Length: 204
Image (cartoon, rainbow, N blue to C red; front, side, top):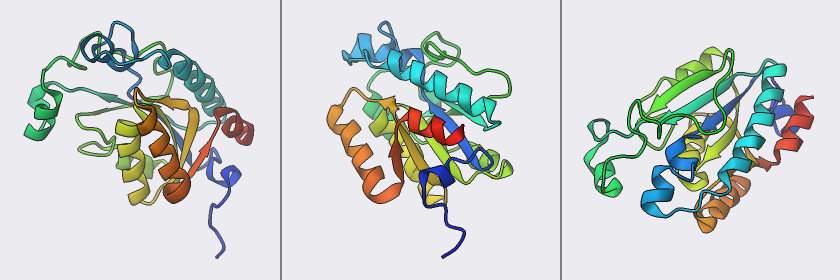
């Protein structure tokens, strides 16, 4: 078939790709954030991930590619009962709090921000409409946690017809098994896993 975007070079073309930055927020990534303090999660990888995302985002902006930040707000008033049950206690990424603020890096210039109240960046948001209005065909996915919000967003994106490219050094998780499992699923069933350097090279 002609017209298929089968290679990394074809998929990450700035004319039809968008960079998604998912949940790079203090409560998920900072040593004094909710997951580190309350859950004892190891968030030590997040600083490097943020630096890698910053470099990739700069290349994307230079090429005119949309950069879209997806952030969580998890006040219980926004969550369904099963989600509240699993969270156990309220306090993570509360609206207007330091914990909900972006970690280490932040939107710049024409970057867009989408606020979500569930794991998927598509659920209950206008992300799909924004992407379609931009003519987006490929999602370059970055952020945390690989096996939770990143996974949920990329799967729904795939179901909605977007090509999926995961920047391997721009995602992380407290769970190595979960992280590795998501990357394996993407490689085998969903899209492409590549380094940020490989993606940047294609863009340049």
